[in-house]
Length: 314
Image (tube, rainbow, N blue to C red; front, side, top):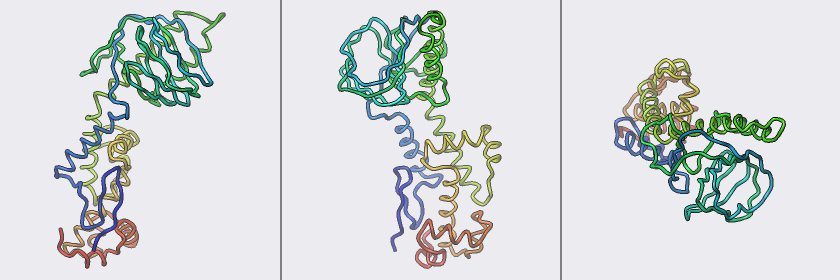
């Protein structure tokens, strides 16, 4: 009897007879991590060029644009940083086409031709500034002494970049104008983005390892009623942060994965001859009838039907 199938973040699993990502298997430890690592780096536009800036930033223009136009065909003598509030912006630089969206940034280096590809409706902050800098290889270790940025990227939600840019744009003209103040604001934004982008590039494997350890922890404690504080104590970080890392890598929450692995263990136990009551208790279900409900919702069969359909298959 063929089991029902479901999609789990691009990996297919079947209700019969067991999942294919159990701890200890090559698929579990290698293939999932490789897919997760590739997903964390992929954007559909190829890997961006990186640039290193040294010394102080000197701002010439800070402003906000709202409307529609085609990005001008030009070569600038300054760097240009754009924070996209909403809409899209399409442009070509270095012979490559790019599309950036609300919540993202892009960096235009000086003396490099760039131009728009179409009329775009968008809202964005932008800053023109002078700084020593040049193209550089992508970072291989964290450099918090310089500004290192890719050509484009996502602005992390936890960073106040948009607020800082809004504040700077409000002080771009007399009597509030101060070049030193504006430059310090833009430099702060650049440093924040620099550290965030470097960490995103250098640490995806660290987050994958953390997610894998959480997955192993869940698997080793399927019979326990794990609480949020149990995870926090085991991994030295808040449950909210752990759950965010886990979901980013595996596409499901920690609680959802607990259910997946518990049902998988239940299937193995039922096929091995354990009673339904023994299986329910061993898999951490304190309520016998709740176990029956969960098992049928995940497999499409009652525990009794499953045991008859798959005897001694594990």
